[in-house]
Image (cartoon, rainbow, N blue to C red):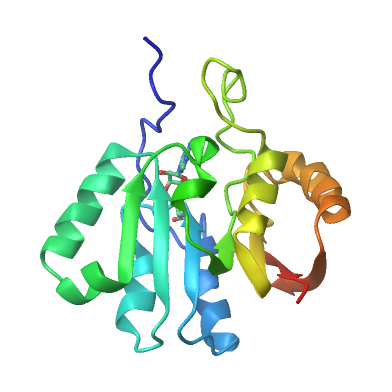
Length: 191
Ligand SMILES: C[S@@+](CC[C@H](N)C(=O)[O-])C[C@H]1O[C@@H](n2cnc3c(N)ncnc32)[C@H](O)[C@@H]1O
């Protein structure tokens, strides 16, 4: 029986090494985002995107994915002790490449910070049932509301692989490159 491709590691907050989540919160504050729904790829054990957005009074809500058992355990502990975070931040355990669009709502903002980092040799095989990075990006763009934003992380270890994927995606979807914010690359879906 096949097993799901999960991450055997965990990631604590290391702003100096991987500042994308902190930069995301900075971007959301800079844009004065309020009452937006955010899809977030890669929660970390720290859950700093979900926790911050849930607690900062913005009204933003976060739907995050982790493929790490330790990170998911940290989420259970976090929300068990904090009903406000439990209400405004959902994290789920899964392989993003197995995303089922039937089960996802629409979002105002999608982060794809770890695109191309966790694609396994079997990910897009018929047996496993996953999608390619390009198909994943398209799928989550289709789940982004018109006028919403899609963000990538320019210092990701997968970014060199992600660049041609992003270039191809730009030809397939109605998106506009807004520019860079700190380490993030920001696109807007056309209205
Ligand atoms: C290097 S950590 C970065 C975490 C966080 N974004 C940060 O910068 O602190 C990579 C993240 O991607 C998640 N991840 C790894 N493989 C994944 C997969 N196949 N599907 C969904 N998430 C995955 C991990 O659980 C982890 O949260």
